[in-house]
Image 1 (cartoon, rainbow, N blue to C red):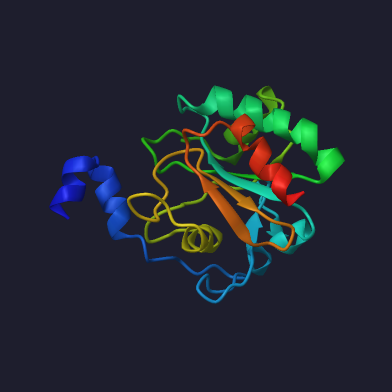
Image 2 (tube, rainbow, N blue to C red):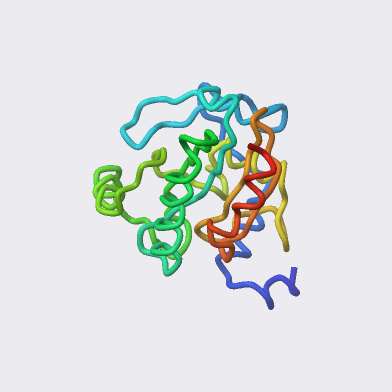
Amino acid sequence: MRIIRFLLPTGFVHLARNLAVAATMSGNKDYKSATSIYDFTANSIRGEEVPLSKYEGHVCLIVNVASKCGLTPTNYKELNELYDEYAESKGLRILAFPCNQFNGQEPGDSEQICSFANNHKVKFDLFEKINVNGDHTHPLWAYLKKEQGGVLGDFIKWNFTKFIVDKEGKVVERHGPNVDPHKLKSSLEKYF
């Protein structure tokens, strides 16, 4: 653990310690026994429960977002562009999950997040703010991390971590925050 402490900021060490713990939410299968993202539900930004089985037959890009991150302008712009290019023609669905676990960069409530998204002309699906790490990790995100681990541990390291899910609901790729959405085109094309 000393090596990790030396290499990573203190907050990341705390996140690593809480890796294996996931909260159970009603309507969600235990992430360890889930077989696809279709075993989960999540609340839309408006508070309605959404069964992820509604995305069956679609390639999905699942991403944790934040409105006050240095990566926000590029990611929101390029996620919108991917949606414009592939939603109608190829059936791409983008599922964005606001998260405030990284330097408090998503401090707003659902109304404020909606306002931000409207100002950025977001067309893709936006969900309620969740935790992607720690004791209260949303079960979907525990499943995503279990299926596609990361470098230096499976925990989510920062805003805009991206998971590609195939048409069968299987998590097939994970991309870090430093990978801009446009760079995912060749990966997405493999699964359409």
